[in-house]
Length: 458
Image 1 (cartoon, helix red, strand yellow):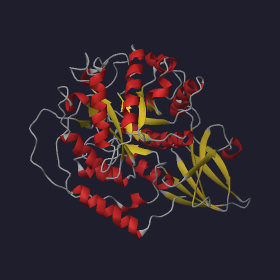
Image 2 (cartoon, rainbow, N blue to C red; image 1 turned 90 degrees about the vertical axis):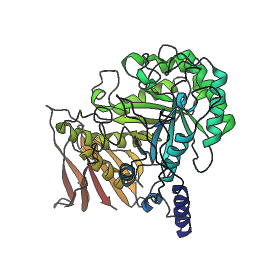
Image 3 (cartoon, rainbow, N blue to C red; image 1 turned 180 degrees about the vertical axis):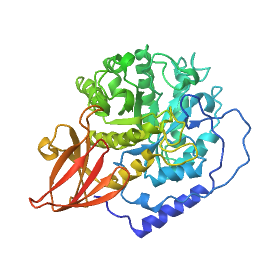
């Protein structure tokens, strides 16, 4: 599907990475208690002595990944080279960065870009595409960190300076998200999430001003409506923003999804696909057709090993369903535990969890694949089997990703009949089994809750 770059292109990319790496300096980063985030802005501590690094991106990231690849992981600390290397080896393309306006501009007109320069320099040197979340209103611009904003002139000046600084090489930031889970009514400590839920009209006004300002500085930039929680108490927020004309002031709609609390239909939709389709319907009912991103997805484990298998299952289910929906980016929150109630792909000591192995297997299988369609019931042989068809090698190889969607207490296995002479069955953790046709020319595969990839060369 994707052409291989020339030797000249590879050498040039390596040279750029080497040059960029020589000026990247190590600094410390802030964290919050309920979600560890990569925070941009001064932490109020003296600047540490500079340590210089050279970063060499993995060569295979130059192959098989394009702007269409949705795979992303949020990395809390880009100074942790070993952790970033794990994300690179997992072939993640996207990441999410939190920029704290209150730290960058603690007093109006006085900017300190040092940490922002450093982190975004590291992000781009490693080859990630950042989604930058602008949040934390400074004291001089609004009553709380979470919003709303009173000094719109100051906000406009800040956005202009911000986008101007990072729109070109070496940073080339093109995706700007306005606040985090703004549809939550309560403003959480530290400005992490919420604060706009009861004032969608003010959020719409902020969005309008931000959209015009960002586009005037960088017409190529994309403005993202802040990753919506869109659960229970926040149903009407998007409706009210759209009804106030907000639909013309963002390019991409972003939402968040955590599987263990959203897969049973209790809030009017079922699963990641159900949430995305609900949001899409709300836009389409108003004549809007916008691309979407899942800028936070995950499954929390509470550090309980008995939950690790289902977390790994969701890595495959969530990304495959998201790819079937055409989501532009799907960013796992996050890489390293404790993360958000231990939703990380690796433990605190960087030991991979099954979810990380599942992520690597996923990108190895589908990193250069084209999504074709969902499998039909006649192809799966059961309404209890969910499956999707991908192709690679210019359509010469089919990859069918399938799993049982029944819940505990219901049948956990079913037999899928595949008309093929031979195929490879690859488990979510990368184990390969070669299967051959029986006398009737079909292969019978036992499908369980653990997703599998069925590779068939035509």
